[in-house]
Length: 244
Image (cartoon, rainbow, N blue to C red; front, side, top):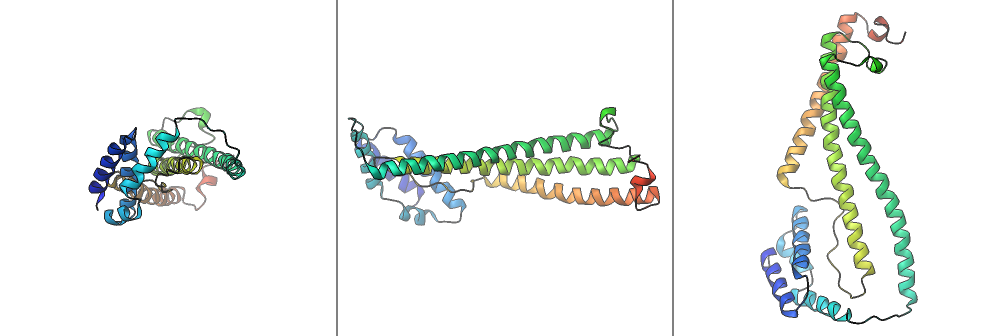
């Protein structure tokens, strides 16, 4: 059974069982297929590992029926589970906050690097930044500016990949949380920790990163070579009095 056949059978089973919100359920399983296919699994293999559409529909039907009344049951096992999940929430929440802060920092770095490259190449460096970006001969400034600019592009690609990974980790944790805390026995397929990226977007990001890294190293080598040549010294920063 391939993806289309499985989802059609699941839709039919959910509709027959009178399950509410069946479109969202089908969407979740469709996304599960897409992610597993991107990992190299075949559609038939994925379908074989999932529960049958009839079993899934029955679970959701029972879940809908169980919502009809409110039952207060003191279950020590469930209390321990809740405490454990609360601890996991605290640790995962702190970790995700740190990771999103890292993504923001990397994004700011990419912007600053690209902006610095533009300023260096144009020669319009504000005087208040002269202690950070010293005066350079024109050809050296061009190479250094280009290196900063492409470093900004490479960092932007890294920022996007980090954002995708952290967001996927958040989604995977929320899915795990929902499955663990669910009381109906209905469990959605777990989400992988690595994100699914469209092949075209992945190729574009990889090409930008590889091109930027290559240009960065070429520009750095050219900048150093031009600085040594113009200053007639392997320590041009002393010749030009950068630290005086």
